[in-house]
Amino acid sequence: MCAGKIIALSVLVLIAGLQSSRLQAERATGDRNADLVGVLLAQGRFKDAEWICRHSIEQLTGSRFENAKWTARLAEVLASQSANALYGIRPTELTQQIVPAIQRSSAPIDALLKSYPEAPSALFLSAEKLSVGQTILRTAIVAASVGPKRETLLDVLVSQVTRLQDDSAQL
Image 1 (cartoon, helix red, strand yellow):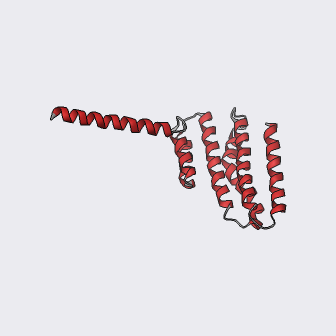
Image 2: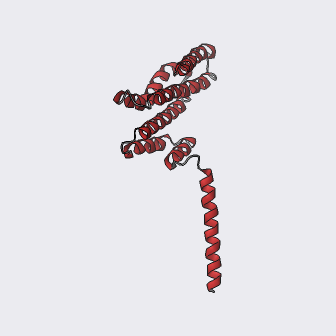
Image 3: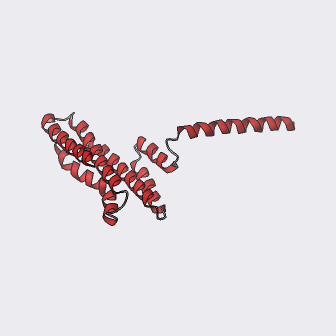
């Protein structure tokens, strides 16, 4: 009887170990919260992803690099949320919503850069800010491509993306 229990326990430990290694293999990074944010974004759970980012920023203790990293991640989450909202907007209202969406999404980066303009991560944060704008503009292009007055709207959006790419090249 005792040998049977040992074998059963060994099998359970082996199964648990296999499941643990499988779960570890599904991780994208060594940062549990970053992986969680990625999964939440993939599921469209923007508010939960935003909460994880804000909570991670609040939990930081003096690491400016980590603060910049989580601030950039928060901006990405906000950009994904704003980009997703563009699909529900009428194409005629799309151009009026793009700049406010970019400003809302970039606000955490702007606040961090304003509080510490000489930060070693300033270039990284500036690049992230451009990435946020590109995310929203690319989504707007997709949303505009299915609506009326496509050509005019697409021309405006493509020129905005081109300007952002030029700004990126200057970094």
